[in-house]
Image (cartoon, rainbow, N blue to C red):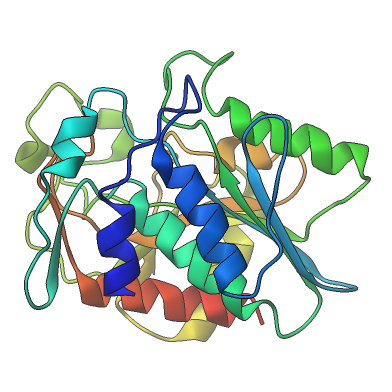
Length: 265
């Protein structure tokens, strides 16, 4: 996992122009690991495995926040020991989705998607997560109704206040607890059904380091809810997601992968 993540986090991808070496690397890495990836006309990468029901969709965006320059990724140093540092949003999600796709579902069918554009214009509803919108249109065209959709992405530490009271102009350490022993959060749901399904998975997983919380967030789960119960899930990362210098204990990613494997059964 660490070697794969070390390579991914140095590769840039622009969600607006659909350019950057990260997409080509992911495509080749999936093929090398025994998957059969395909790229659609929107630049999204698809993998399908298994057959029958249930059907699950796992999605991770490839693009980097446009406020982060390509050079800032290339200069990133690998963390030593148990700590990973760099631009981790969403290299971590892509890393987890690659490893999940390599394994495939134990039962039923799973679709793994690597979307080209999520970071662009989070406050513009017509542009935000437009790649996920293309995925939804394709799923509807193929008359596919997943039992659940999971947006795999990094997430924030524990909030210092309720999400609707947060002032996002404040510094990162004023919004979040910088000491949080939770490894992963399941959040990003917008419907009761989505929360109920997520909460059942977390309870059955039985690890106190994985928690459910109320944080709608700006992520692709908001789009996928149009076709199925959807939520976001990912490991806790410290630091501002629009700047370099993000850090994550590698144990967080390992716990996240165990949970994703658990729910894909």
